[in-house]
Every structure is written in C-alpha cells, then in structure tokens.
Amino acid sequence: MKVTPGKFNMFSMFKLPSAWLCGVRVKSIDEDHCVTTVKHRWINQNPFNSMFWAVQGMAAELSTGAMVIAQIRKSGKKVSMLVANNNATFTKKATGRITFVCNDGSLIKEAIQKAVETGEGQTVWMKSVGTNKEGLEVSTFNFEWTLKVKS
Image (cartoon, rainbow, N blue to C red):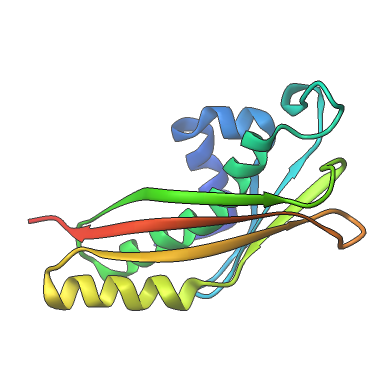
C-alpha cells in the first residue's frame, strides 16, 4: 500500500491525537523528503502569543518519523523505532503557518538497510527545519532515531 499524506493524517488522528488536534498535518512525503505544517491557533499557543515549542516539536518529529515509518514498511521487516535524543534551536517567534521540512530520507533508508543486513541496532540523526510563510527560519529540530530489527 502506498504511503500518502492523507493516510498519515488519518493515522495521526487515531494514534497521535494531540498532534492532530493541534493541527499538525503531513503535506507531502516521498523517499527523500517530508513536509509537515501546523498553524498557530488558540489551542497551540503559549502565553507570548506564539506557537508552543512542543507543538513545533510534534510537527518536526512527524516530518522525520513519517519517513522512518514509510521506509520500515517498504523494507517488509519488523523494525522497532524510537527517538533516543533530540535538540532544538528557536530563532524567531512562530506565528501563522509553520512548515517543517526534512530532507534526510536517504539517511534513514541506509540505516534500515544496515540494520536488516547486520541484525544490529542503528542510530541516525535527522534534521527538520521550520519556516514561516515569509520563508524565515523559526526553529530547527534534530532527532536521533534508533532502529532495531525485531526477532
């Protein structure tokens, strides 16, 4: 079955309800890239009238994790996935629609192939950059994904 933005958004409604309620959506996904968006609204704001950092984190993580899920599915193997570490940098107040882009699909593809071939757990760092409608960077998130083939 082909992985599509609509299927991921339906998945998030049932499996990631807080992200879905906050407005996090997958806009596009392929083997190398994933784009997610979230709009600053009352439900996801902080006291400073901008988007709460954790909501940005949900959108950023989904832009990386969606590709991890898609590559695991494509491998046909049972592979566990978990974020072991993350960090973030905030450079501008997040208001309006924020778009997160991850271009690290090739990294996850290689890590899954290596995990399947060797049977050893793998880790990979993936980066997601969030920009506002003017194209200005508001935040950058890095996630360390761990992958292990289930026996």
